[in-house]
Amino acid sequence: MKGKRFFLICATLALIAVGSRGDLHAMDMNRAIRDARSAADYDALARYYEDAAAEMDARVEEHEALLQQYDAYAHRYGHQASSLRMNCSALIDAYRLAADLNRNMARSLRQLTATQ
Image 1 (cartoon, rainbow, N blue to C red):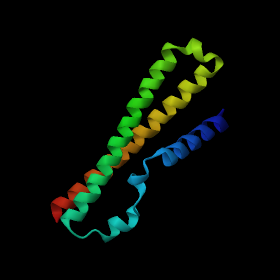
Image 2: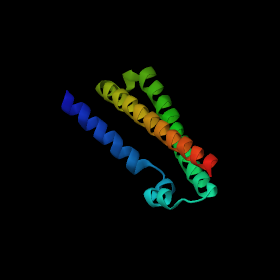
Image 3: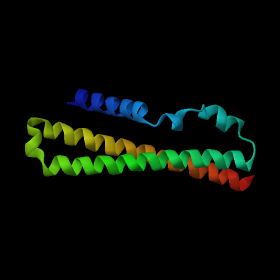
Image 4: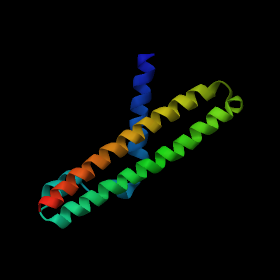
């Protein structure tokens, strides 16, 4: 069972990485953060992370709707209903975590903006 859970977590993280919008991850964030000097730079980075958090929130809502559908119509999905619900719940948790991390990064960058 632990092997299944580990695989599910790895698969979830892979889906997040692959399924994320390309433009959100187009730039090298380590370099952008390292090279930021002005309040405007930090503000732009904060907006980037806020946009990423909003994208993750949208994905949470999407998967919550799917989860409700899987619960309401479990009989249509047969023996796969349990797996679909479990996968959907794991994705919801992963997207919530990603949204929280992005919001925390944006908050930290906003604090840097305030000190500039």
